[in-house]
Image 1 (cartoon, helix red, strand yellow):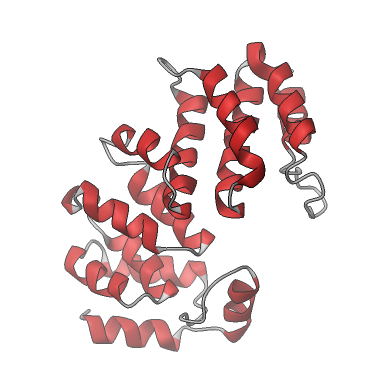
Image 2 (tube, one colour):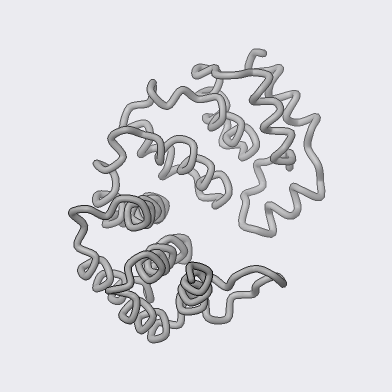
Length: 221
């Protein structure tokens, strides 16, 4: 499929209910409202097409960007291109897709982590803390967890809400995966109160760090 055909197909798959829901959740107006399953099916049909993906990304259309993420060849992206793409996408759902499919799988992702988590760019900082949370969970060798907790305690209250979310995830993952830091993680969560009153659907765990930590630890027993 060429660029015109792909964009036309996405437009034809648009669902007004999905579009309104995305906008309610912070999406910009430039989207059709294509269901996630339909984007995945279209990506499966196209397979990898790096040049088409780059064209779709430039449209700034959210559905086109999410399709682009699935058909990109990450190995053909430079570090500078990845950084620019992370910075340019503010819709959380698309940003998370880019993180999970591109950034997290990038061999040299550690070069981004500390740079981004200290960035003044909200979306770069958001991704940098996501990388930190991932390392805390899977491979924390060489990390100064005490210093990370200091940074969270100092900076999370004034951080942008987008960055707060992944900083909070890091805090929770420290408490869940590192018993020696659990008491301090719980104390920081209680002190800051970030997401204490966050609305949660029945059956879901609150993102409030103390509740999240205690729930996950109880499941480990």
